[in-house]
Image: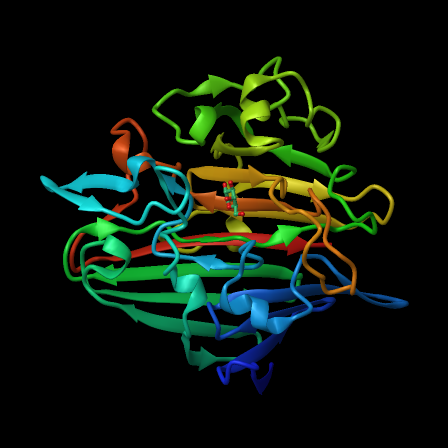
Length: 349
Ligand code: GLA
């Protein structure tokens, strides 16, 4: 573990922590509890496996949510409104008529406090007052990043609120394991038989569709670019993959499970040319596959290049988008006084 401080042009102080496995190094920032970089050591140098900004001041507004710890609630809430225990709450409409990633005031833009560091882990904490971003309850949130000897980045989320509230944090890292500037040649496998179509506004309404016979099918490893522009309504709406998959949770992974929390195989990303590989495991029911369709070549990345359209893929583990408005989906609700936990693992080889 190494720790350093730097100051942004705005005068904001940021702490950066390096945590290392055998070949993987992860850099995390106190600004937003953001994953700034993940590198893989190869004979001839370190390779960046995620997208990040060259200009660190961009993390203050993080326009593309690179490496962001999105909290309290990741993804969309339809109509920017929900009802909990008979009371209706209004959120910011920052994505058309809907709320995306908790709004402009998301915890991913705030300063988190480093509470614990060990040789290979760091824990960030933040207090979120009652009514923050429109959500009920005074909340205490923690996120812990740990890198293991076998090069897995384990992300543990914890939240506690004084009254019932929503809790659905996710990590928004964009992965690109290869040397191509886009993710189209990346091979992706997702352990899901179904996805939740979102329609024109990317708001799932309770529909669950089979991936079978559609370009959404990643049950067997398939090139991301193979069917991304297929004539398929759901893909047309979003200009590429930007959908929630219903994870099968068929294969429990005991290695990364905890006593009271199992994690399951969710996805695998592979780069054929370099052989680099990433497995994803999670305790959560959903996975948003987002292929960077909104990226438009206007920011410079960690390799000093402009990051193009579809420059990386996010594999955001989560409760389903808009779940709070769809009773048949698992609810991202935590009870007042109880501590909610989830775990997601990205393992590199
Ligand atoms: C999520 C959404 C996308 C997009 C990105 C942020 O992944 O599903 O539609 O808004 O965040 O750019």
